[in-house]
Length: 66
Image 1 (spheres, rainbow, N blue to C red):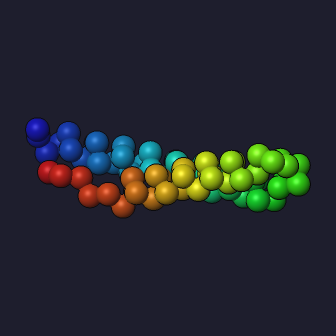
Image 2 (image 1 turned 45 degrees about the vertical axis):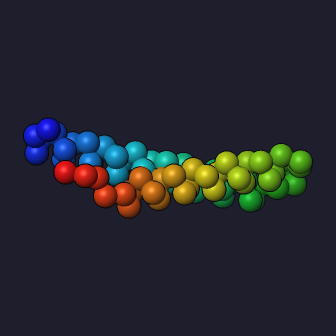
């Protein structure tokens, strides 16, 4: 694999991680601010948003092999 291709893939991975992290943070904010409206599903949506935050953080901090 050439060096030029690895930069693009590395950048795409970091960008996708940042997008997932931001979506997870926004979802967590709206989940925790509207717990009374969600009722029994509040825990489920909180879990899903935390999973998105963790996956986004892992993608942003992962070191790709060159």
